Image 1 (cartoon, rainbow, N blue to C red):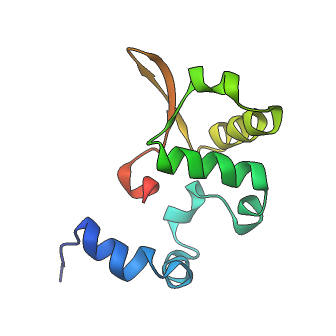
Image 2 (cartoon, rainbow, N blue to C red):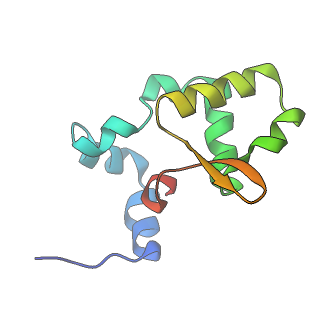
Length: 103
């Protein structure tokens, strides 16, 4: 049986209960593209992912205002596939692969 999920339901029942969500996803194919809990303990990586979430991506032009640790963490997030480089009319923007990755 398929049950449609809207963003409000996902936020209420899954995103507001992150430990339960990660328990559901643990060991699934979906988790291969996600940072491991050790990665999220890295303050710079957490900063990068937080900025990508709150700003709907990170424009490459904004990196001139960031420190070396942030830039290295962004490079790591890009190399590991957590963020993708998207070419826009305004230049490169680092974004999540899909809205579900963004959630």
